[in-house]
Length: 444
Image (cartoon, rainbow, N blue to C red):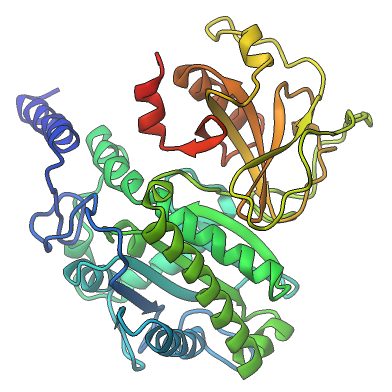
C-alpha cells in the first residue's frame, strides 16, 4: 500500500469515527467523496416532516420505458403532479418540491442535489417498469442497497443508464471505485444512516397497494440506484407497474388507476408521518425488506425436496387487531435447528425458553400482510421461529437471542439459506427498541 493510500485510508477512518462519536455533520455535493452540498444533517434532530421532494423519472430526451401507447416519462409526470397536489391539499404545512414539472431532461445528480439543497425530509422517485415478458406485472419499491440479485441489478442498470445522456457524466459520477475498500466504508456509512426510514415508508406503500387496492406487489427490494445513492434523506424509488403489460399500461394511464395509486401513497405517507412525528423512536428501527410470492427475491421455482410436515402453529395470544403494535401471536416448532458452525455458539436454554418479558434480539426473515406458507424448503428446521404481528404485518422471526453478536451470526446463516433480506431487531419486554439502545443494555 502506498504512503498516499495509507494516509487516505487513515483519514477516512478517522472521519467516520469522529462523525459517529461527535455527531458531526458530514455533507457531500454530488458524490460520497465531494465536499459541500448543503447543510443537511446526517441524523436530523427534528422529526417533523416539513419538505418532500417528488421526482418524476426520466423526461425530455430520455423517454424511459416504452409501452404500446405511452412513455414512462409522461405517465410518471402525471403521477407526480397529482401526488404533489394531494399532499399540498391534505398537508398545507408541508412543502412539496419537484425535480421537474414539465417534460424536460434532468440529470440524476441534479435530482439528488435539488433534494439535498432543500434539506428535504423525504425523497420519492416514481418510475414505470418494463420487461421482455408481456406478462410481467405489479409494483415494486426500491431502497438503496449493496446486496443485489440479477433481476434487481437489471432494473438499476436500466434506470442508471440515463447518465449516459448527460454531457459530463464522467465528471459528475467520478470518484466511486467499486473495488475500493474505502469507497465501500463511506458508502455503507451514509447508506445505512437513512435506510431504516426508507424501508419503513417503502413497506407501508407496498402494503397499502396490496391490502387496499388489491394490486400485485413484487415487494420491497434493495438495489444500487444512483439517484438514491446521492440523496441524504430517507429515499425510495417506486416502480408503479409495467408498461410492457397491456392491461397494466392501461391501468397506469387511466384516471382510476392513477387515483388509486395516489391514494395508496397518501395512506402510506400518513402511516410514515405518524411513526416519525408521533413516535420517532420507532423511526430508527429497521423495517422489512421483503418479497412478494413469485417476485425476483422469492422465486416460485425451488429445488425439489421430499414433502415434509410443518408442525402445528400454537397460538399464544388472541388474534391481533389492527391496532396492535407488537404481538407475538405464534410459535412455530419446526424441529431441531441445523447444527451450528464450530465458531458459532449454540442457542442457550434461556434462549429456547424465552418468555418475551426481557431484552431479546431477533432475526427477522420475512414479513407479509397475510400468513405465509412455511412449507418451502428454506423454512425447514428453523428453531425458535415465531410469528409476530406488527402494524398490519405478520413478521417471521427467530426469537430469544441474548447477544447481538449471536444474532448477527444467525442473520448471516439465514442469508446463506436464502433469506436475503434477513436483519436483526430487538425487543425489550415485548416492545421494539432501537438496536443501538439494545446493544447498550446487553453484554453484547
